[in-house]
Length: 224
Image (tube, rainbow, N blue to C red; front, side):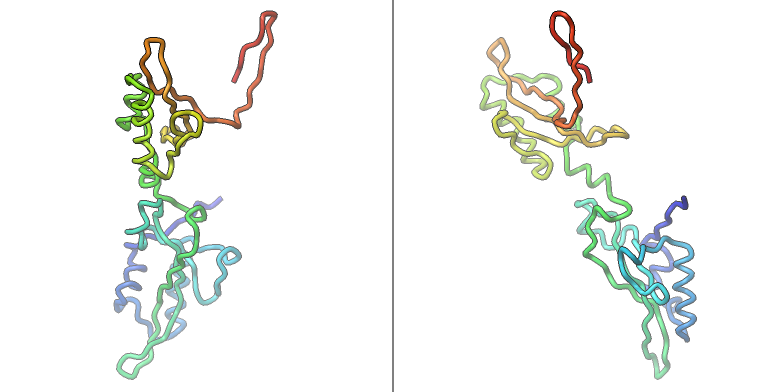
């Protein structure tokens, strides 16, 4: 399978179009079309069955780092565009150039690359000061104090940490960094200790885990 090659916004091809430089001025339609096909031959174009366009006269590409200033925090690493040919007059002469039209209605899940670094900022990791204290078993004098402590996580990460109804705590997506399972869901709950203090207990929230039971003469044990 051929690995896709995506163009970046700093490419001379893209910069010539954005800056409307002399490199993007052609004396004939065919000359402009040759440049368009040159771009197509070097970079991965979108499937016209998924994003309809005239494959003979234009291309649709995903450009890395294109107009992502306000979207990078949402995980966007680039955007889709349509590159087409248009004519214009200059000192009574007719010229042709490549132009860009933004395609902004493609959801992030359909983008070929995503800004994982920014995306991971939407959820805590185990280095977060709150989770670090949780792992160390920090104690609290009251249940209310413990709940207030762990709910700070929801204030920091409102999109990925939610209140866990009936569990005196929160349910959170935590960035683990594991190559197979980078994001794991955990329940964090205020729990009473034998000494009368409270701590934050936590466990993985995996309702889809398959559980097998091995029976013994005196009962059974749970095996992952």
